[in-house]
Amino acid sequence: MLERICEQNEAVSTAICLLGRNALCLNQGELSLIKQTVDALRPFEEVTREVSADKYVSVSKVIPLVSLIHRAVAACECQGSSLAAQLAQQCQRRFRGIESIYCLAASTFLDVRFKHLGFRDKDNVEVMKKRLLSEMQEVYQTRLAAPTLAPSSTATVSSSPYTSTSGPSTSEPNQSPAPSGSAVSKGGIWTDFDMQVLSGQHHRSAASDVLIEIRRYSEEKVIPRDSDALVWWKEHEPTFPALSKLAVRYMGITATSVPAERVFSKAGEVLSKKRNRLKGKTVNMILFLNKNLLLPQYTLFKINK
Image 1 (cartoon, rainbow, N blue to C red):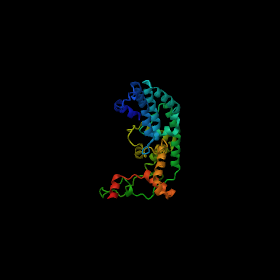
Image 2 (image 1 turned 180 degrees about the vertical axis):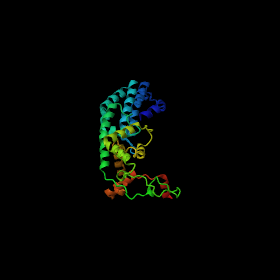
Image 3 (image 1 turned 120 degrees about the horizontal axis):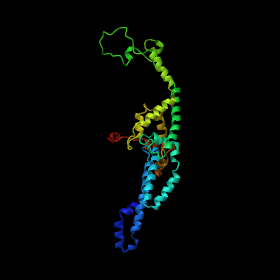
Image 4 (image 1 turned 30 degrees about the horizontal axis):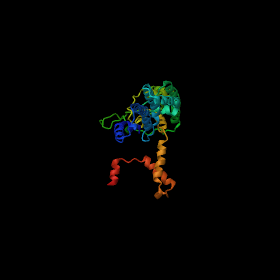
């Protein structure tokens, strides 16, 4: 409303003057105060729209947006706005320890669009990393404890990826196949090398693996802000097996309760006077499909035809 007043001030003032109510026109001081109020509140409107979305990851944006809103309010305060000064005090009081909340800090760091760049205090990043490393170790230990399928012992030469079937037919009949994982037990010229490889693998622990993984992730380039972080994690899941599981765990949280309130509003539209005999299970299914079933346009076109 205040923005509309600033935009239509000349037209409104002209109409008021034609009606002979010149006393109702805004003076320059009042108009300047309205403009300062709009400038001070505009960042809060943008932040509200960002964190209230439900079609993309929103929880990882909380800490960067709080940092940005501090800067925006400080800039308005420097212009002499009393409202901006009060807003700055309220932001300091309400968002004082937001970077120490682990789920928010972890989701921001695991969002490849932000990582540690969204934090104002870098010490909070190090505290969060220590707890994240412990969770990564638990993920690695869970993977090691999970039963795995033993490799088949009936592998032949033709199943080896290194065997060529297009070569000449004059190959040596006593040519041995490529060594498999059980080459150590079979002996041969490669025994000492295979023993060295196995001993090196035994020396590695879950602690060293998680340190290597988180260091490699920290060295990755930050992707553009309009990209989808979940798509990036899906593509890089083999490279970061432990971090990808934690990313799904923390980045799936919604930043606000607005999406849940939208579901309640949609339920009020589904249940009407003409549809008041629907069972609760049916209503739940309709709401679930309404929020999660996204048909492409070409599919809808085929259905209509």
